[in-house]
Amino acid sequence: MTTETIMTHAASVLLIPGDGVGLEVVPAAADVLAALAPDLVFSRADAGWNCYQHYGNALPEQTLERARHSDAIIFGATQSPSGGAPGYASPILSLRKELGLYANLRPARNLPSATQVFDLLIVRENSEGLYAGREHPITDGYVGERVVTGSASQRIAEVACEQAFRHAERTGADPHLTVVHKANVLKKSDGLFRSKCLEIATKYPGLKVDELLVDTAAMWLAKDPGRFGVIVTTNLFGDILSDLTAGLAGGLGLAPSANICASSPALFEPVHGSAPDIAGQGKANPLATLRSVVMLLRYLNRPDMADRLDTAIETVLRSGSLTPDLGGNASTAEVTEVIKKLVLT
Ligand code: NAI
Ligand code: MG
Image (cartoon, protein in one colour):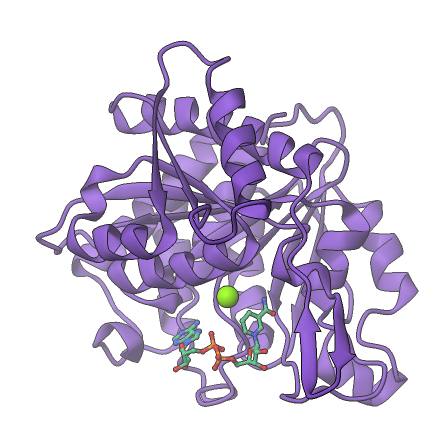
């Protein structure tokens, strides 16, 4: 399992902007990516709440087909109505499921100006847990089933162990994996996740392995995020802890992610949602999506371009124009232009 693929043809990138700020940050990121890698072939497809209202389907079959046949996907965000709507299912959950994207990589590192120094990666199991979609009625309410299988635990543990070595290579630290679970209460399900992760980790000589209960992990992440390298955890815990690390790293406007597996095109997306409170105002931070593009460039085996974009983002964070979520007053378009100029010089 690797996040790097050797391309022998012009790589195709499918853009699925979705709703809200997705419609602003995905075109911005595509603009920079096209400037950096003019040989990439772009196409665009619909998904989300707007799409559902127009066509009665949040994830049309045509979008899925295009996704399957692209080399990589950039997804913005979609809006899900609270309480749901008839036949509406979250397109990102459906895409992850349909494409078999079982591993969600969510890196976070400190802002250049921060006093706390950290550089960590959350590897979130993406296919089961409480997101298995199994809710059924009981007499006075509902039961949501939390699915944990040995095979899914094993494959996410393998991704996490490999990522721990890559992470160590990049940061210069020793390979370090922390297994995060709640096996003291969820004895069977998280007991299985824990034991599979620890068992797989023994096959990787040189990997330092430890474990934390999820509540304790949240405390340590807030207090001393620098003690972590790679964290592997189940679906909901990974979702929550990665918003915590996004907060530590400067906010959702900066947090990138990749959804990967060996047999499908990878999907890159900001961790944030459609941000209806700021959508349409031209002030969404494009850096979370641009950082996801850095991950995409590494996946497409273009490390030099990835480094150039990463450095441009760091330069902007250190000295440049910032959007309001980071305390500045620059627009999405202004930040995008600055980054574009930086990567082209
Ligand atoms: P959100 O991530 O959309 O927004 C949370 C806060 O972060 C808001 O104050 C927003 O203004 C800010 N924020 C988010 N992205 C930003 C950016 N690029 N620049 C500056 N500030 C940014 O989460 P929320 O409000 O809980 O959810 C809104 C909608 O998004 C919901 O319908 C939810 O279901 C959906 N959602 C979709 C996701 C996806 O498609 N992958 C992921 C998370 C939420
Ligand atoms: Mg989330």
